[in-house]
Image (cartoon, rainbow, N blue to C red; front, side, top):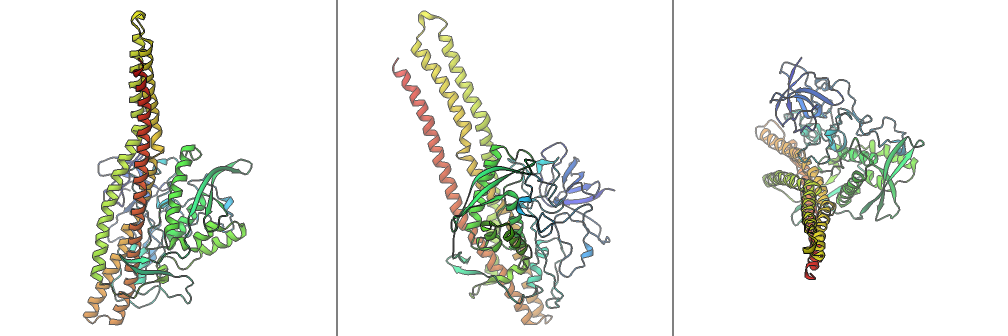
Length: 563
């Protein structure tokens, strides 16, 4: 029976089996039974085909007691009966982001070649993307700049039976990240305080507002030497990367599966931090040289952002990832990270904020300004990505072909001049022929040039597309906290809530506000450094390139001076 649904995100089809959908577009679903994470239906333009199940929510009448949302919503939320949520049939949910059911699995048993079957089908895949079947590899496009999924953050609710804050209305939108992240429960005081909190992250007041306290032991980490390795007598193959932290100097070797495990742990723990996305997975061609080189470049940028972040760089799970070389110790550290209780809303209990007073309206205005900025930057990053991607395509095809055609035309002129020997000049003919070969060489130079400049630009833009796509959900957490403060103050003024309880909600909102501002300031600091480096590198490589072209032409010009 056909059902109505609403698209949560944009999806761009890339083959004839798929159809494109737009955010908020009304769809018709032929069956709510997903096939390996895909649904079949019809969009508003009458096109019929497949699209990711995690990109839509099925609309039901108010009288219905169930509501199906494939976008990684948890089974239940604070203050609600979890029976209200219906899991999609024939799906499995990952255990706190680990793709392995057996905790005793060693790292070396993780199969980097299995890009789909070991992943949760209805949960997030790499970078929060859905995990489609291999026969639909277009969900991991390498150059489709228009593909902009918003990762569904993998958070857990902190559910408590505490009655405190119960008079404040709960958010009825159970699929809001404010609810499913547990931040609503934190604001209302329903996240139980731990008897002992072993970790603490500090926020200080800087010249531009709240900022994360710097890592007292800063370091960087190199990503080098991607090497193809095999196991089980060559049955399985994978690529390992050599990681060398500057504060240890002893390398460790990690596969992409290890990065993926760490990324899911980061998403699970750090509610209000924009975790950089990993490079995309690819269903085919994983051992091709260009793909390996591209993944290495993007892992380098990912690692730079991780080590530069004052909070992420100090995370015990990250340090374990960078330093552990013993199989037994790895297993212990892996279990410890997966059993970490200070995740999601509980992570907010680890934050130590300044005592300085901040006016709630001032903070809200600051967040609104950043929201407008991040939306505009997101649009401009997408625009530049599209332009740069098209320029790469022209370098690899159009420019090379045009210069080859020009070169061939010059060579044809040279050959025609040889047709009447008494009037033929070998020196002129050779010079013109050499000019043709020079332009063919210039064409090859154009084809090779993106590796020196445009690829780095696209890598940086891809990283920032991921970082920016995280902020709408993070900002929504703060907006939800603001709303609860205003509601609690209104209820206090009406005598429906104790002032102490309203003050508690305001105090906990300050924690969310300070952390978001600290993350905003860190983003701006990194943005300025990264885009300065990106633009300097691009311009320097452009200058070198055109100097090389100029040198080729100057040497060719000298041949005519000797005629």
